Length: 480
Image (cartoon, rainbow, N blue to C red; front, side, top):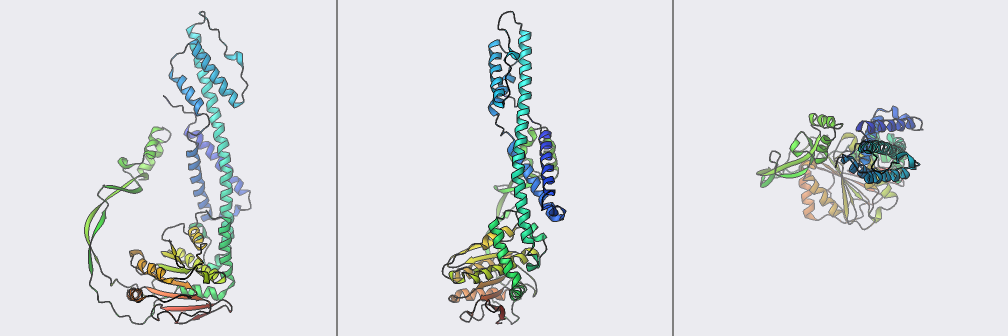
């Protein structure tokens, strides 16, 4: 059955352009209009608008409420000729459609006499006129529906944009506390923060901004280097292991989706563009720019990997990845947890600013972790820091997880920072031995104690540097 083309791609594009123009105009009339003059903010808004327009276009395709009427008309368009009875049925269906639109039906307009005197030519002419009128009315109805839907979606999207800019405005007020520019809030935010998320951010930021000693502690932790005392070199032999290595040239198994020029691997949604003459040029452009979404295939090959535990230590002063262990146990509840999360937020912001990979471990007796190697991390950090365990304290799983991360290629030279009140037991000898080996390979271990409790009960060799922050006096003491 032939499909009716009720609305051309160009008409829909024109409607979208008109709606987006209205959206920008409303933003220019709002109290947030100054963000349109900010280069990064304007670019972010443009990206969001383009993504919304594409999604809006996709949602409109084949979703109008006249599908049943369209199918009826398509069935009549398939016919070359009709009888008088069929034409009367077609007329009744068209009148039902008009009544659904609220259009008054002129009954005598299409009246005809069903008798032998009526010629086939007149009957065929009436059939053609009714087809054309029905198609025109249906096209107008779909166009009106699309316009109304776009207007509704535009209003909802405008509220979303305003919420994003309002959150950005509140967060940008605290940029000085983090030593950052406004751009970092734009570059690393997905724009999905709730009002509660922004309130949490403001609470941590306000505490940090009002406490100069805490800012100093954050700066010392962010710039700390491993101790300069000599460490005994490891006397271990390289380990050879047989492993299955990925082979990008072997097309054996689907492992994901990527952008390419391979037509044989293109997704069906991309190939569907070829079915619409108005969208064929888009397909051609995506092909020429290697931007076709397609399946990513790879295979495996066996190989022997030589792993030398004596990795080349990082140069002193070199800033590598960061692993942060944050204590949210019951003993940290209240002000200590607020301080710890303010420090964590500062360190995460600095990691994003300097593009340092970061791994945050939230621990009590259990633990959760967040990897910040990817972009759009600010929203994830705020959501993650909003979590708390408020149970007992067991640092062993967190330190074991940190040690395991240090053995990963992306974090092999990372700095490990622990923020806690250190009301906890010590570490088992085997874990301490593993940590000492990691220290000899260049990893740094640092601790910030919140409160009066000292770290004396832990092994002296565990941390390169130790700080104690006294919240009641607002002072920082460096133990080593």
